[in-house]
Image 1 (cartoon, rainbow, N blue to C red):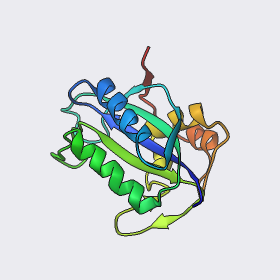
Image 2: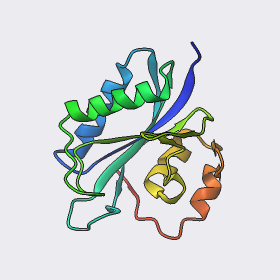
Image 3: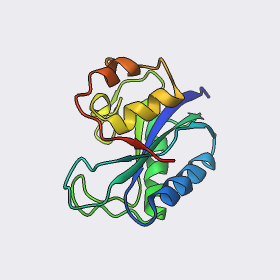
Image 4: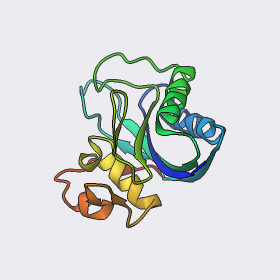
Length: 161
């Protein structure tokens, strides 16, 4: 089996978000054929969607896995469900949100999964943690993460102590 380097975005804004992200990372590290390599600092960010919700806490982790992309997606969705994720509204509150940002250098466009993540180049709460743990990373069909950061017009990201 081949091993892929994968980057996962994590976000939460309910029920002690820092604890939610730590719990999710522990679950990710326990997945079969998978090793947690690095994790970014935690960052606070304003919600993208409705503003009548708490700020988010976001992070990115790097894993190496022998799992196929679709299997990894299913396992991440299981972690979300086990932690109690319920989608209340589009871009709304989340107990935990786990997104596959990059899966090696693969381009994936299936019914259930788009990689690189479709909004990756627009999200400071993804790009800045990515640059922290993978400086110089090139996102397929998008460019170098630092160059994408330089094109952001606004950033409301605040590192947590």
